[in-house]
Image 1 (cartoon, rainbow, N blue to C red):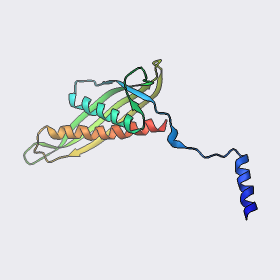
Image 2: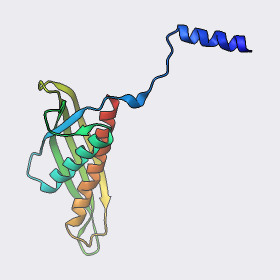
Image 3: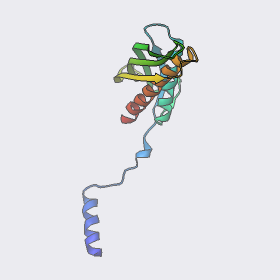
Image 4: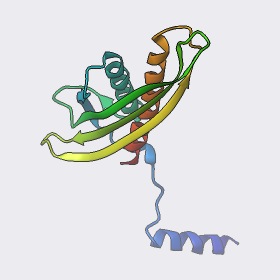
Length: 158
């Protein structure tokens, strides 16, 4: 039995087999250069900035705008549609449909695109219809969570 195990290990060593440590990935230093919208939307700008920065940090990379920065992030929101599709008995919007179409671009220090992805997401938020414009913000935050997840998966696939 010992001889069979020895021969098996000998063949594995001869094939170049070695264990790989995946946690030793080199962390990149990212900087968010701009997030642009087709029209002024302060709430959405705040939500998307937070979504991108959280995705970079949770992917194991560093978010810092300094001389150490190796990657620059540009987000161009092509469209952001927030539509009320349901109303409460008090005739306030209680269900919102939110769709976003954005370009996620990562460039290196030489302004050469390293990564260019188009992200399209859609979600629906259902509230109570009693709190006015707060539910619209919650609907935008819901689409921000989906964008965060998508950017996280893009950054961890590289």
